[in-house]
Image 1 (cartoon, one colour):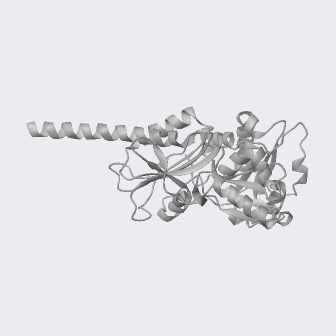
Image 2 (cartoon, one colour):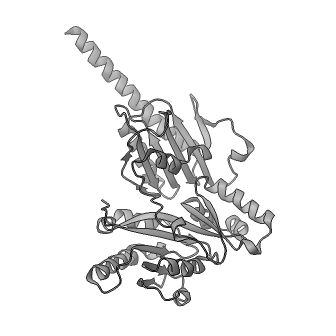
Image 3 (cartoon, helix red, strand yellow):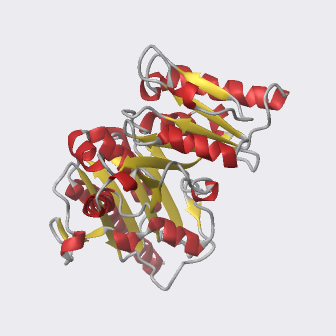
Length: 364
């Protein structure tokens, strides 16, 4: 469980050469009390030599990428950093940035932060930031599936090197990014220059009880809707701009008008992450549960399902349950049917139980 003293962690991803180290150099000038955990791909670590002097500690994971070494290297590194901070051996840094290699999948890092109880009590994931090269980004996204996954899982997308790309090229890249991740804001960054406030303090993986903030976080209207029909989900009426992209990553939304059973929703999502953890890149929802006046926020990333958060009130007059998904190599109809079948079955059971209670009452 997170505490008020837990430190925010920013996961910095991006394909090879997309400007992560340049960005870090500039950020550390503005936010020097930052601990940086870097990882390298290959036997010789070079990137740390490019980082300028900072008041925060620098922990270097070498000999392999974080996604391969996360269970054996990341957790002890974060524990050692915390202990050194508490013991006064290093400055009392205020945040941590974990920079992955250009070919790393962010998923295992998230699982380590959420799954290790000791870490989860002291660190909290603040957000995933992904850099994308304007000059070569389209080609990288077309050729490398991991680049697509990094974009799809991001909370902020930073387009770099726009001064080296043609305007049409930049516009096409923005369209591709919106298709892969409709909700993440896209910012332009030249030579690493950006205000720290645009990357830190996102709280993107810890929705609070403020209704409007949660609604903005969900960004339901930006996703392509699927309509739940009597036999199978089908795409709702949509404009060409929101039609499904032809690719391995799909972003879509689901709406349920009637209140849902909490156990049924939880069971459906747990089954999804148990059998398809790498296929579920991101799930967000504002849900109306049976017997609950206030809405509940749900959030999942790959095989990590965060604890539900109850909002103080509904953000608007809409009382429907709204889900958004970003999936990879997964039939969106399967996700929709899973939720539909679990919640429909729970509804039948509730109706039967209610009927039995009414019948018993009549006999009395």
